[in-house]
Image 1 (cartoon, rainbow, N blue to C red):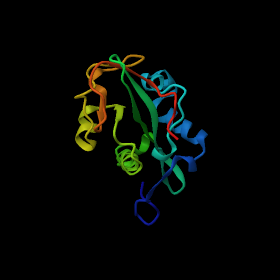
Image 2: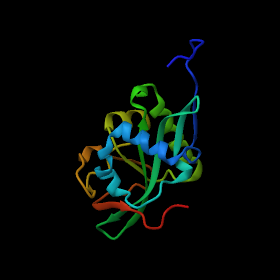
Image 3: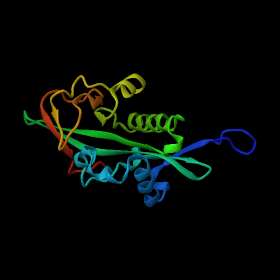
Image 4: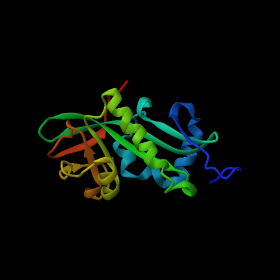
Length: 179
């Protein structure tokens, strides 16, 4: 949206902790609908707090226009392996501002923070493989035998990082959350 002088206001990415939690929840409702809590992604991370150092908000002239949150989850392998993962998302953008690059900027902020903090070894998300693969390097190469606590299109289970497990197993909350 252009400013009074015709220029596009700048988007500022800040830690999500700088935004009122109620404003984040309201944005998530607008972006995904009130039934969003029934989605499989919520079941995977159930009871876990978001990881503050990997969660961000996008502000435009102090108005919240987007958020990204990342969550500590666990791959419970059928072979006995427990592999900690970081679940990336949701990426929520004000509906009128979608396709303006805000979601991309939020993803880059979270991914860059994950690299900087040593949290990038095993990242996963549920999303469009054409988009998240092309722009961010996520693939379903190692997730084909993963299970989740709810319905999901298997091709939308995406991951990246050198520690992403391959093989059969269940995704769920990580009881010992990241500090």
